Length: 238
Image (cartoon, rainbow, N blue to C red; front, top):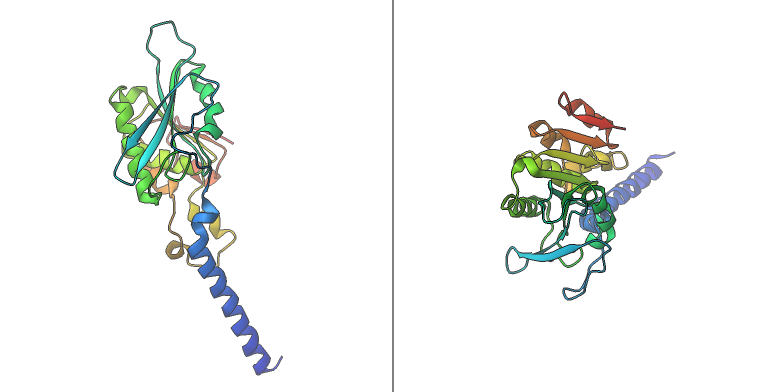
């Protein structure tokens, strides 16, 4: 191959590289989030007893919450505690509502929060904002429950949000389902040529949060690299 052809191929490679990088930078929210919005006045049709409420964080931000009632407890008695459930990057509360029975059938209430853009929630869903909203959610639960009665559970992206919250607030247990070491690490498998630390707006670095979690941890599936960060007594279920 002569120098002229080589130079041409190098230009093509650079153009392709830059095009993919620019597309990734501007489309990452579309790639990452797959919400199912709902009208604010729409009614939930859910199989379990529930209470709906809205947390007005600011003028632009409304956080929609559904509280599923404990079904397996003596009449007029209090629930054993509450599970704050952080769902993954798809759907909305109605999509994940069936998960509540895992705990409501055991005497716990389950509260689910929709992130902005999901369901009836509105506002910004930048990573730092998601952590702030999770803390507001926790404070709401803490007004009724002691930390030893609060379980934090998250799936996928929600596992990172739950882990960050557990790293700054006490709880009975942190349950993570299918957690990634970090979003950056997960995407690096396919985009290893790119400076993802700079390109990505979202990182969800569970590996940074987990060492600061003092509560017992149960990890279901997920990145095996996180196993080395678990404490004695924590559970890893592959």
